[in-house]
Length: 217
Image (cartoon, rainbow, N blue to C red; front, top):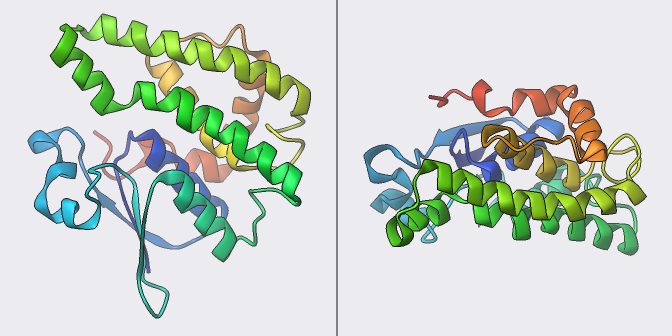
């Protein structure tokens, strides 16, 4: 049994849900509510599983010795290597490096500045109100998307890298969910916007939407 510990609106957990769906992997979802009760990610139970107090965390109990993995990129690559034969990470070293670089543009440079604990800390140290926090997030998404649009314009086909889905698409769609949520227009990013529409037409992406999760509130 695969168990995904996540939260319906977590971008990182959203990515992993997409991969689980693309690979048609049966799994159990255990909700870790990031806001309720002071944040269930800080509970003793979850601390024992993931001391970083972040979601997602994957438990793979299908192996002789159970495996626990944190960090969405590591989880996705693990699932792709073990169950998907590397279909989402490229066919050769150059393509794999290219896919990882684009995925990290999103996961390492854009997303962390939208992360809940970062935004909460802004309110603590600088008295940022909701509008200030949204402006902060739009600024960093604009910076990241402006560069990403130029890169994708050179390598995109139907999807981010050619005509096959990759981890770049998997990382992009949850970040675009954040963009819409906080009022960032995609008018300046036609390549990104077109890829979004194609991905959301794929059932594995649609099923992973935050609103379609059992713990959505």
